[in-house]
Length: 72
Image (cartoon, rainbow, N blue to C red; front, side, top):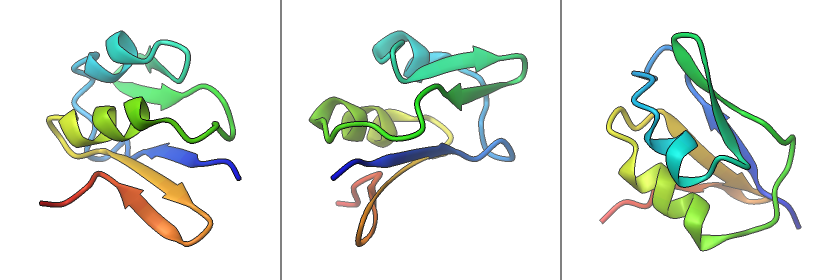
């Protein structure tokens, strides 16, 4: 199983937090972050990045739906 990660460009503030924490998954591309790979192996670090996004622009999807950011 792989996860799909998405960045909503309408919400992204290009803070660079995601690219700093996971440069193998995210890159800053002008005014927005973008996801580098099409699918990634499940990894807690990516959920942590989605949780920490100041704009809540990152979503993580598995086969059943959205799993990140995690809600309290």
